[in-house]
Image (tube, rainbow, N blue to C red; front, side):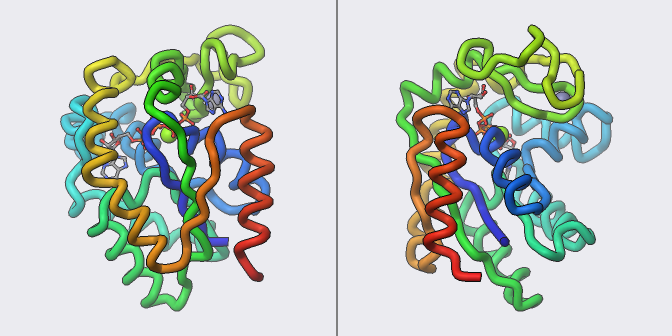
Length: 218
Ligand code: AP5
Ligand code: MG
Ligand code: ZN
């Protein structure tokens, strides 16, 4: 299964990706998580990425495209992958299409998580993210079993730098201006599946898997 998750900040891409990646036994590749790992490790890429992420802007395509191209050459991605947060504009979508066409491994589906702005704000303002494995939690909607501790790895939960009100507003604008056009791009390619991102986490996963099963012939 070669799958892309698309949707606005806070739609639940990272939350659903964990379950979908486990279900299909494919790696979860999140460009946001890769950038955050680089920031934590003080790499050159991390310093560059942070200067854009803290403002809610996209990291330049040249950097992001090379990073994803490299990630897709890893062994674990040869039998499939789930991309979360990439592509984020039409140019990135075109680069990905070309890379996959070269290997004759086209995408199977693009799953859009749809949600309205009011819900997004409450999800992002209460989000807590694992400092070790990046798993997302929510102080009210999706709390960890032990307060401030990650269920998966025991890491400490922190608030993301870009989950502040002003940055959230800019991320939503950037989504509307730059990322939304990829929805029509993939609709034209016949790959788009849209599912509501409202409701319980498990309910959304089940709905997504049912929609993918119906749409993707293997
Ligand atoms: P990225 O990390 O991708 O952030 P994003 O797109 O803004 O998405 P989020 O991670 O904020 O939301 P999500 O949809 O994953 O939601 P989550 O599951 O956490 O990117 C960050 C930055 O990196 C970008 O701004 C950019 O600068 C840079 N970047 C990344 N990729 C790039 C690219 N390709 N090109 C250029 N730059 C790039 O859920 C949100 C909250 O809601 C959590 O608290 C969760 O617990 C809760 N929740 C989830 N599901 C539910 C539910 N069903 N009910 C109630 N609560 C729920
Ligand atoms: Mg995420
Ligand atoms: Zn963790």
